[in-house]
Length: 138
Image (tube, rainbow, N blue to C red; front, side):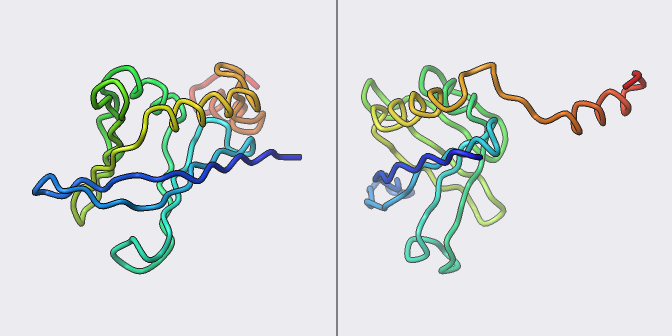
């Protein structure tokens, strides 16, 4: 049986002119995908009017709470002592959201109660597939 954690939270979208617009978001973690975290945004705050989910590595969130992290489509970095920026890069542009660091830390701590850091598994089938791919014996 899989465990799913959800934590509704607020964020502030930082505009190009440095204005901030409050938006709702939900932080989500599931033991079915133990290496990832998800941030869900409701339809009314997205460009296409559809519910949108961004998925990225749980370790990236942890690293980004302490120091700038990420080089791809999701980047996380501290913003002072009490906030954290999460940036989403897509072909349409970039969105920078400011979260309360305490909300992200609380969520991350809750995920570790489900599956501790370093205890994630990617599944036996994938492990065997990787061994075969790299020329090892299963």
